[in-house]
Image 1 (cartoon, rainbow, N blue to C red):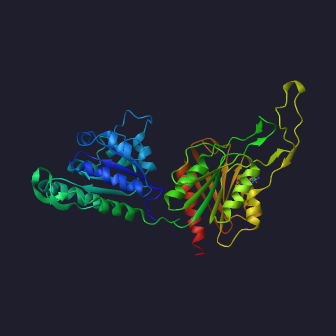
Image 2 (spheres, rainbow, N blue to C red):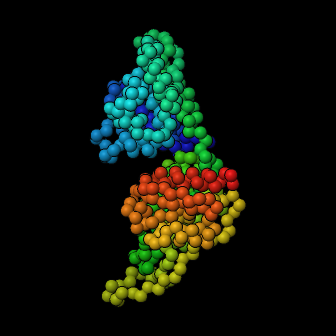
Image 3 (spheres, protein in one colour):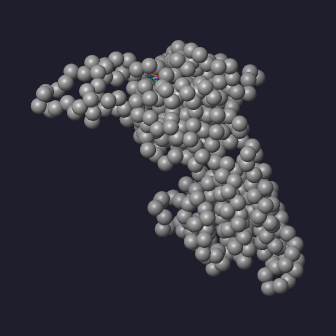
Amino acid sequence: MSALRGRTIVVGVTGGIAAYKAVEVCRRLVDLGAHVVPVMTDAAEQFIGRTTLSALCSEPVQTSLWDEVSPIPHTVLGQRADAIVVVPATAHLLGAYAAGLSTDLLTNTLLATRAPVVVCPAMHTEMWEHPAVRDNLAVLRQRGVIVVEPDEGRLAGGDVGSGRLAAPERIVAAIEAVLGSGDLADLHVVVTAGGTREPIDAVRVIANRSSGKQGYAIAAEALSRGATVTLISTVDLPTPTHARLVRVETAAQMQIAVEHESESGDVVVMAAAVADFRPRAVADHKIKKADGPPEIVLEPTPDILASLGARKRAGQTLVGFAAETDDLIAHAEAKMRRKNLDLIVANDVRAAGVGFQHDTNAVSLLRPDAPMVTIGLTDKRSIARAILDVVVDIRSGPK
Ligand code: C5P
């Protein structure tokens, strides 16, 4: 399986004649299962049309720091990317990147990312051999940037020499190499997300404030690390590319889905806020207002995670969540032991910017036999990364 499957690759296209070959690279990345986000410089538009790239990639092309919906597209793109590839990379781009100049969306994205970066230079031989270009490449290499050396061959204008963009297969292989196989490759990760909705009658439900964002971030992160992901969800957020979605609504439906999927699940992450109680009797019609407020008798729902914990398979990793308002760590710790979990993610839902509905979270990660790890307020994808880092650590066995 390609290391590209489910990965988000930002492809930066700069203004050289080889820009037309970027189209072929994008197509191959998409064919291999990558989510390809194209970014063009102004000069690139002199060589190829926006429509071509938008049609072939997974998202419309982005070109500007200013006219996009997001107020900070450069940091968003940089954070989302599992890898960035610049194809072709002109002498100008290499110079700006080496000098840390951020003049447009692509150079800003390159400076804002922590993902691996691959540059594929293409230019006329004299430029390629110029000491300024050589020095800039040396600086970039020293900083960990991967350089896919150009080939020798026919250049624009009929000259023959070094500086011709590397063949698309060589560029794709370089991206696959920097991504590696992923530390969750070959694992089936089951993630639940969202709050359950428990019917009162034909139209009314008892619900909770869970948005599902943390579960979706975990699913996306697991995919980007090579896992096969089943997402069991109660909400309608965009499904991460290549996740298998199982849509449920109630705790009972979630239980059926989780029990089925966890049979083959190597890692089960119960990020969903499952109702603890549901109406004992559900009216099959709409209860009439005129009949006065109904008396609703509640009964406990099955504790899905506790029952998974009770019959956990050897080699299976169970992760639970504890959203608390008081005595966070003590409650989380007790829950972890009671439900036989390998990891519990505790968050204080009363703290600012934490938990339900926010795009950010702050958590403590508790394990039965290892010190607690605390992650301060950050975006939910970074929380997902930290959770899966611990999962990988657990699965690597005792040190
Ligand atoms: O005990 P509490 O409901 O606070 O535990 C929270 C954890 O247990 C979460 O991971 C949640 O998904 C899971 N849970 C469950 N089934 C329930 C209630 C909670 O699996 N009925």
